[in-house]
Image (cartoon, rainbow, N blue to C red; front, side):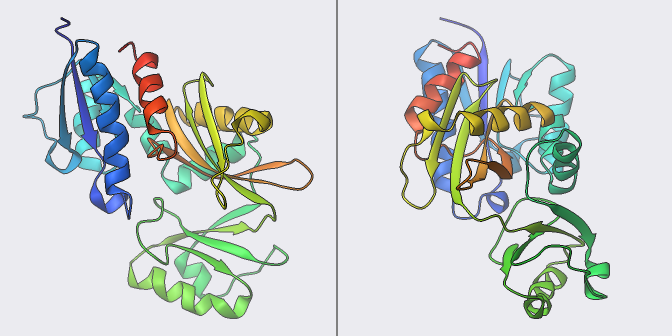
Length: 267
């Protein structure tokens, strides 16, 4: 029986819109694998994490807000293995994520970060056709945070949402035509699954180029457990449209949990 302790930290509900149960499920499943392997495991809500929480040897963290991240940062300095690292979580905030991926040459739709103030004064549209507007701080937290615009006349409605929720930065992104694929990965490609968003069809075995793009993007920001969305065009091109930490792995929870635990030395 190992004396090592593994602590699972659930994502804050505000960062898990409509996916609270799915997010909890992958964390619980991973902790169960550790438990069967003889590790002592426990779990806690990110909102409850503070400096009085006993420091574990491994922390499997979905936390995204500053209070728990400060605790995790302190634990990292003391030797706790935190996955994903605090630095990588901060890199997943929309503004640094967009910059880091662009600087690394990761294939993405053309994108432009602007302030709400500039947007209200008028946008010089550089993209033909449809565009997407995304809140520029974190991933979507509520309806309206990500909006597809058919024309410039739709802009006032979109900006009113951002103004009402005090979202000061906005990402403009070109629409790319193709099949949207949801992907899930662990480490430098030991585990990778991909599914067509429209049908749920498993296309993991026939999207090697997507795997390369996803692994590259994850390594750029420092993620070890990650997921996201991409577009596959009819020319077999891949465009990454989103990357996030600790996805729900809802289509492959059991195998993902086993692989995460194995990757972290828990099975």
